[in-house]
Amino acid sequence: MGKIKAMNVTLAPDYKPSKNEEFMNPLMKEYFRQKLLSWRGELLSESNETLLHLQEGGVQEPDISDRASIEADRALELRTRDRARKLISKIDEAMERIEQGEYGYCEETSEPISLSRLEARPIATLSIEAQERHERMEKTHRDD
Image (tube, rainbow, N blue to C red; front, top):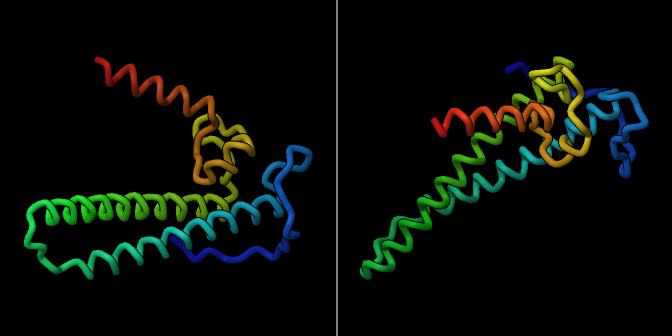
């Protein structure tokens, strides 16, 4: 992935995207870019904390139930770390879409994804309608 360059746009601290402005104008793109960068930073910080915690855990507990509990905690931490890694990858892909001018548009229909959906899930690549179709198709094929 190429280096993400900062846009020459200054956001007001209280800026929120609105349906009354042009979709994915420079302010809106910068808003979502900053939102993605902030989320990415939080995930990296949590991931580093998890890694440190996992590295600390080398002491063997003599009690079998204590060991089982520690192993369960470690397995949960590893799953959480894997989830964070996958989210970071999706955030990087979203940042690339911003750079390419494709961010905020449905991969299937090329229609704008609703602002409320992007606020809730800034890595979304499908409109809610396309996502629901996709999930229905998955369920149909899974039931076969």
